[in-house]
Image (cartoon, rainbow, N blue to C red; front, side, top):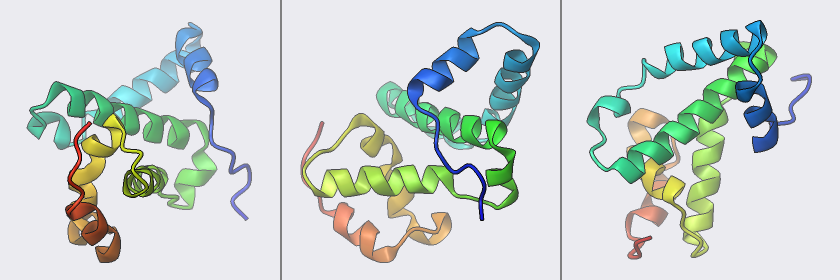
Amino acid sequence: MLGDTSLPELGEVYDQVTNVSPQSLNIINSIFYEMQQFEFVKTMSSPQQLSAALFVAFYRIYVLVTRPHLRAKNVQIASTLEEMLAVLAINHLPTNLFFATRPWVLDYETEGFSQFLAELIKNLDFKL
């Protein structure tokens, strides 16, 4: 249905972006070109949250650039990651990535997340 749906492990991403070849440079250029389009880069003030959000964005774009069949099917890579991070936090396993992506989940109407999920994480009272 979606073809190869396996998501890359960090080792694959690292190998691809550290291997200096024309293909790697094209992938890196594509990633950074697309990352310029994210508004959160201009609005996030916390360096920790910004770096975590950039990591999620980088991974999302890497998957879509290296697996164009997923992009063609409009697969939601980042949303899936953000939802998994929220579930971890609900289960008392928060991460820096969760705190970076939490505002997007809370803005469920704009971002397309579940209101139920947003309500669950709205009142979490712990900090990393």
